[in-house]
Length: 258
Image 1 (cartoon, rainbow, N blue to C red):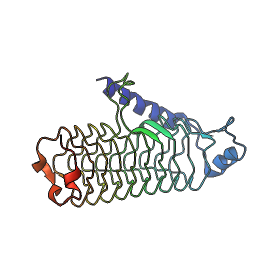
Image 2 (cartoon, helix red, strand yellow):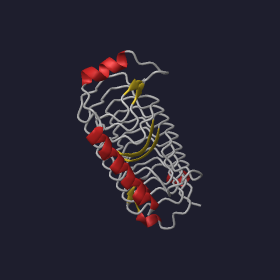
Image 3 (cartoon, rainbow, N blue to C red):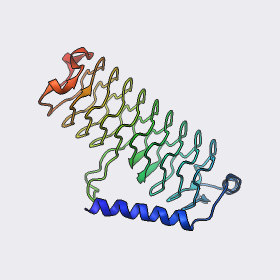
Image 4 (tube, rainbow, N blue to C red):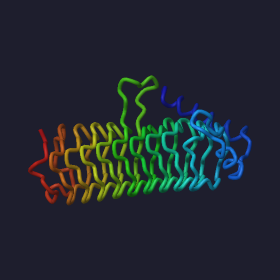
């Protein structure tokens, strides 16, 4: 119940920003960025930037907290290190963007385009259902649940039906993530933490899961055809028959099912 009202609050806050914030065009954004510095960022806080073309801009010295970025084009822009918490980013285009070490908490990013984006070291607790993350770099990203900080109940990243084909998730933390029917074919998941995640129907065809932790995960109808399972931990998996293509996986003898 707490989570329900929390998200209702986020939606109401977002609607308020959309109604009250002044319209700003790209020219005005560039003007504000021209004199921006780390200790004096461009003020784009809570601004309505819906559907704007903000592609290829250097935004790392911008304050975009709580801004409305629905359907905006930020492809190939630099947003590294930014706090984008509580912004609105549905159907946003962030393809090829630099979001390394950025923070996005409490944000709906359904159908977002993050293909080829740099997400190294980022911290996301957001809804990314049906998002495009093909060939994105999530190495060392921390998108997992912080069990010591859950004042509103369990808040976790949702990647249901997301496309992570060919993505790099090396050393990423995605514990307890919702990843039902996610596409991870050809992805690199070396030492990736997926403990307690829901991977039902996910596709790991040809993926490198060497050293990954899939302990206590939900794996019903999950595909592993041709996947590298050297050192992959499957602790808690009781019925291997629910795992599709397991017999054709590479290094199955080196996987850990205890």
